[in-house]
Amino acid sequence: PKEEPAPEEPAQPEEPSKPEESKVDYHKAIADLTEAIEKKATELADDVAAQEKLVELGEQALAAIQEAKTQDAVEKALQDALVSINKLQATPKEEPAP
Image 1: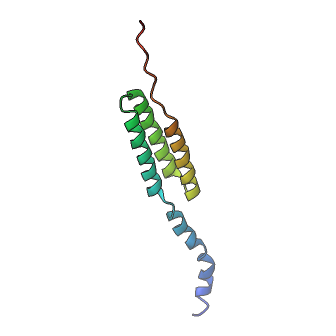
Image 2: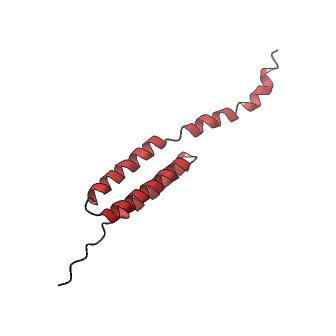
Image 3: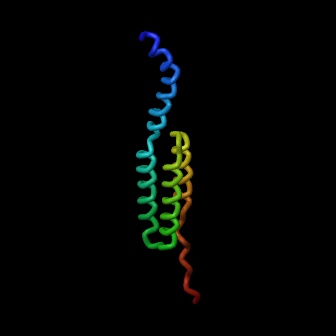
């Protein structure tokens, strides 16, 4: 009976790898992403085209974050998204021709 747990021992190192995967903090990344989108949406309030682009970037970023399997991948997806969102500028308004 004492030797029975021994064969299970090698299986145990696999167990800790599962909790590590679940330690990936999607919530914070999504919260940061949402905050950046809301801030940019306020800046682009009068620009429908830019807001549509912002929504598109947000959806892509959300998908990338959710697909990430490691915390590093989540962070990279978030950083890439924040860079894209911050680069987004309002569409220049065309001056009416005189």
